[in-house]
Amino acid sequence: MKRATLSRKPLSQLVVIDVQERLCGAMPAQELGGVLRNVEILLQAAAILAVPILYTEQAPAKLGTTLPRLTRWLPADGRVEKTCFSCYEESQFRAKLDETRPQIILTGMEAHICVAQTALQLLEDDHHQVFVVEDAVISRNPAHKTNALARLRQAGGIVTNTESVVFEWLENAENDAFKQIAGLVK
Image 1 (cartoon, one colour):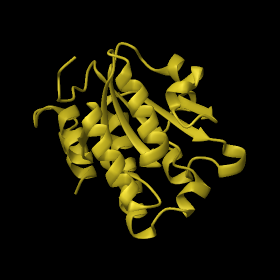
Image 2 (image 1 turned 135 degrees about the vertical axis):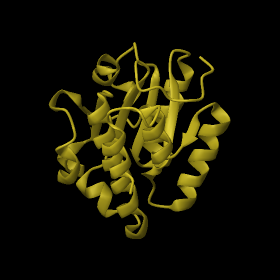
Image 3 (image 1 turned 120 degrees about the vertical axis):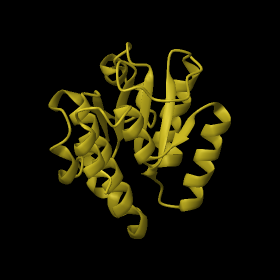
């Protein structure tokens, strides 16, 4: 699997990792707003284009649930509660992955912990191609995010950005959803 571009159908699925109330409170406020906006854009575009969505919550009894501003875009059957840092360690997560869609687009927090560990485990499986959306992931310490993205690049992950993802999903301006998608990123 050497393809470095995304395809709306049938290859992609979106994963939102641990965008939870208490975790968000620990993130740098000046970066958090932009990250949340980009996660919302990705969720809306995925919904418009029928890209499957999974989302995780790390120990929600302690860290709270997913931010309410995101839940309207999340499918009820896409939630995975976890205690492992890597989503891939949770059997429920693996069971919910659509194995016919090997391109996994990762967003969320923290970039150097749950996002990185998930990406690294997915990369170990030759069936998955991992895309980490740089402007839709965050860590408490920006240097940790920078380090995680460099490490994931070295491991074979593809670091991309929100607009690249949504326009690669869209494929061309003749797509019926073009105006909706273009409106999301204005």
